[in-house]
Image (cartoon, rainbow, N blue to C red; front, side, top):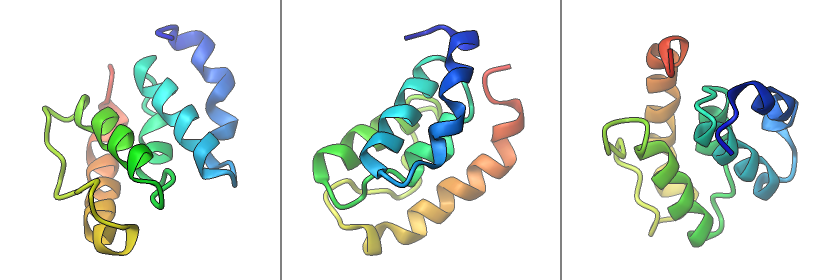
Length: 99
């Protein structure tokens, strides 16, 4: 964890069909200060409360502790607007994230 150059090896897995794996990849990329981890974390396994909690924690760590309305206690369909807010945030902040 923490090696930005090595983390690029994980980038192809950010769109993995297995969302649990996708989340793990996203979390690792964020920890390595690799912005490719943000989309993977925001679409992570939203049917599991534990993973939702870890996912929002990772995302909040790079956004001044702002959750953008995401509530790990609620299911994916309730969090849909927050997930969209994270996607929009990434559109704006992503290109300069971790520079």
